[in-house]
Length: 493
Ligand SMILES: [Zn+2]
Image (cartoon, rainbow, N blue to C red; front, top):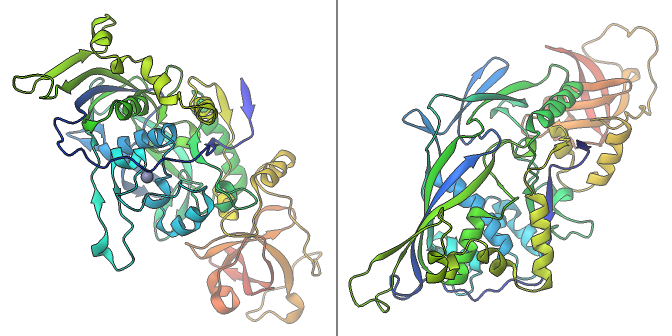
């Protein structure tokens, strides 16, 4: 078993240039192209948690409930669609939709940093394949919301409902998280996002590619490693997040409906759903820890036969993909499950490199333990002037979790500390470096030599009430707060 000190994800690089000449809709939807539905079965390979965002805070614990319908877990269509679309975008060399959907703040930044053609489609008149299939929203012409046009796309996924296992049988998985006054308990399970610049962009500012998480069967070892690291870094200053996950082996059923697709588009849809043998998807919370690995299998395909081919009323052709007889393939070789893999990727050398990288990241089963650092790592990397991943990992190799504390430049007190006064005298002033600072909670810590956890500092005790940056030098005095010592009269330098 390898134990790897590296990111739980990697990037599939950009190669070549996306096409933007795909049609939004067929003129005659039911007679042009392929219309029908694919019945799919999703199997849970590592514990799966798809939540509603609702939780119960219980002291040091936060209990996260899964999405349920009639007491049974289900997977909302939106989650499935995002998962499938990300693969189709990659396999079809489409635009990077994630830059527009979830991170509007970063859109302008991101679109300047991806190669030409990869910024999100802005007009229905110049669509990449993924936007043409799954839909998009026009960016508008800057005159206001009214100018935006939403394109629905021609692929719809249903919710996935439990088809095996009994309701109420959840497996509890514990993740350490942090506490934020505004949001309650949150886990660093969504990081990094494109705002974490040093992780998404190279030194010369170019986007590194499309992010995919590794899959590991050793999720419990990965999680244990992370919990230990978190405890070392924060002592008892963390909260436990309890996820009620769907256990391994459970299966869900859902349908993918499609309208007026070309054969190439259907190939991509099948690939986005089923991938290849030896690859699997990732879904829901806890991706960095290996939670939510799932495999999708297409069980059957119904295709509405076009009227131009049959004189009678429209009828569905039914293909049972679980049977390996030659009939289906002879009737229509697009449904050859080995064939579509070739067609999707048979587009020259650049596509082969992308394919290889995607296959490498999505490889299943992968028996490796990934080291996943604490959230301060991600906080450190927001904005400019931050450490790179390589620098961080060198620091981790010599000393886990925190970089070595720097000695303060000011006088270091020896012996017992003098009694505190309400207004510290100038001689009590010290210098230090900000260890971490959470802009949401408006507090952080200043490095103290020899101590893993630094000195607490609240924004109200910073002159001018400005937010501090990790690594920033400050001058401060020590005062007393409700939880013990804290930095007061803090002057950023
Ligand atoms: Zn697009």
